[in-house]
Image (cartoon, rainbow, N blue to C red; front, side, top):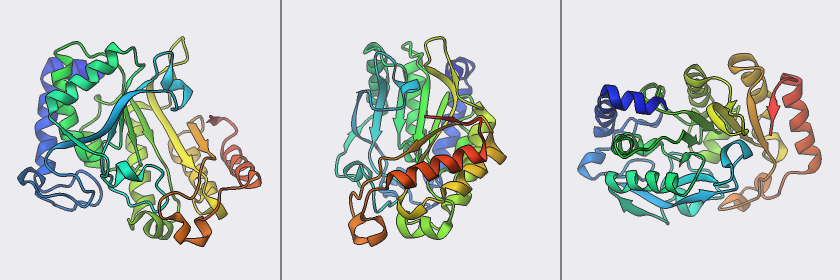
Length: 298
């Protein structure tokens, strides 16, 4: 794995120091809220000085290239930089489920997942804890961690943070939620989602490229993009697919997801208070294949 080479050369430790510099007046994500998290202040996302984890273990509900026989070794981090009104994991994203862990404990969790036979270490909503994760990764490397590292995020990422993960992350698993900034502001509380996510996905692609599989069909490197189809075309699926085909790759691997349901506060918004129809999902698939017949759709 690339992170093992970075660790052996001392580069991983240098990256860790640079990431901790971003944490002082926090600018790890595009919100750049400048919270003094090392002094105990909590950021706009809700995260503070320590890593807070909701749960961890083998997960068999992820995309099949990530699962394998032993499952994807997921670590669900508490809090999130977005405020999605329809969040299906709001108890985690809003910090209702959380337990503080030291970096030594986080390293032990990674090693435990490897010992359980998981296919990878899957970091779910990791953005606000990247400095801690890289520190824990170095500790786990010294004890034999060798699984691919999955960065599973909302897509709302800061380019500067991502650049410091070049060679560290093996597989990026980002959302591409919206094509219209006004929609992102209304439903996720950020005014620049499309701009930030598109720049982030370009950086992810620069680092690892299209999703690559081993002989057993397991992902070992690359980008797998998730796009949740919303009722009434609110996600801007056609424009999102055109962006992927034109500016990322015409052979991108995309999970076009039909599992939207009105969770959390969604029923306060009439346009979000229903599931999508079969016709809406079929139209979304047509948009994808029209943008590129060579897309690998999951």
